[in-house]
Amino acid sequence: MNREISVVNQLRKNIEKQFGKDIQTATDCDNLVSLITRDCKTNISSQTLRRFFGLIKTTSGSSHFTLDLLSQFCGYSNFKDFRNACNNQELELFFGNSDNTNHNYWDRSEQLCQQIIKSPDLLVSTHHRLMSFPMARKYFMENHPLRDLLGSVYAQYFLAYLKYNTSNEAKIFAYGFLFQSSFLLQNTESMDLYYNKVKETELTENVHVIPAGLKFGVQLLYADFTGNENLFKSYFAEMKKARLRYRTASEKSVCSFESTVLESLIFTNRSQEMKFLIENNTFQVNNDEDYIPSKRKETHDEVWKILCAVAYQKMGDKKNTERFLNQINLKNLGTGWKKYYSLLYYSVYFHSAQLDQKIECFSKLKILIGETYFCYYQNYLIAFSKELEPLVVGDINLLA
Image 1: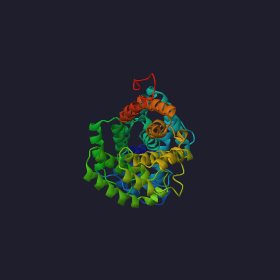
Image 2: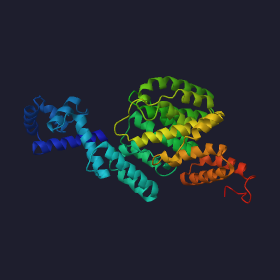
Image 3: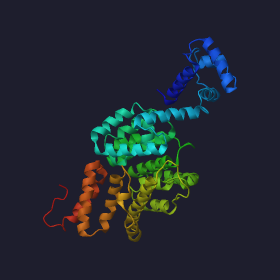
């Protein structure tokens, strides 16, 4: 059932509760008109109410005016407030909150992330439970996408998320992460599928700055991966124009448009394009949404340092690579982000480390690949093994 239909059905129930009985006849609608006119000082026709309660067949939905007026009759300012109240009730049911502030839901969602990362069984059971709570699923997925689990059954969460969230922003968000999952697992068939899904989704005005950057990032990475130079140049030219439209939004966001594009480009060797994104990055100057805690900003700041270290290493800029490597503290990465970005960090840190640090770095990289199943990094492991073998006495099979 579409989420909007579900909310409208709930509004019907609330009206009947306010009215004192089920609305089943034309007379009921006439009597309801009198109550609405008395309480809201606004007229509504009995025929409109008969259509709303299904006593008259119709193929069109109710107008904004009707939904707002009926919501006012139930004690809400408008239909938007009624819908938000329904959403909060659902979040309370799922997360078990008595306090319905967004920040509290954020904390409860964060705790759930920590739990499912530790428990494969909970990862599966939570997915099934979320199926019954569309708005909780929307809140959970949009605010806490767990990059560390992209190589697991967690990817199915994004497909379930799309069942009730079909906006262009939701499609780019979900298909973008599914593309990243396919890329890291080196599943070319799935990459083709999700790239086309992202490409076909129009970048409408209501798409937030981060999904907008993700759309271009996916398209650029795919063009590079398939070796389509003309397509890459075309996407990059489009991206440069789009970033200007998102400059103001980037100034209010914990993560800029340029940074989001860069997250995909660091899996390529496009050094000049990466340099452009770094040198033209839009940094946050205003607070983001009030409910986003400082920890998320701290995570994004740490991610930016890692992205810059990777990019400068690929540019051959040792000075700037070392500068950013020396600033990185992996402990600042938030829940569900640590393994994903630590893999990037160790893939760069290895090159500048001393021998004992190289061995430790190699070991951590190997463990992380085993835990995430991100086989994209296997080539790094093979290359690092070949570099270490002549230097390590008594251990000729580092990949074992």
